Amino acid sequence: MTAPGTLDVMGGFIEAIGNGITGLVAGAFDVIGDTVRGIVAFGNQLLPGGLFWVFIFFLLLAGAWTFAKR
Image (cartoon, rainbow, N blue to C red):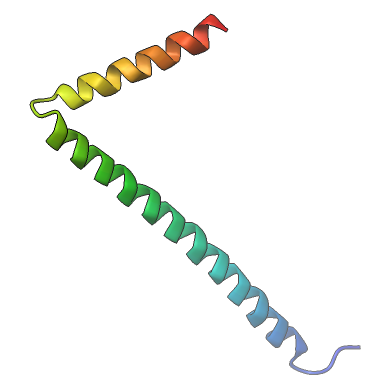
């Protein structure tokens, strides 16, 4: 037999843990998104006029070619 209110305390504890994990995951995705946006902004400044996207395309093409050869 459990004491009255024990389930409420445990439910709140488990909810707090879930909220903490959710916050960590959401924060990680925010950091990843900000990093990608920063890299893209820097690449567009470094190689203006769409050359950055041509460079990215060739990197992806080279990666796909290397993967396909295996």
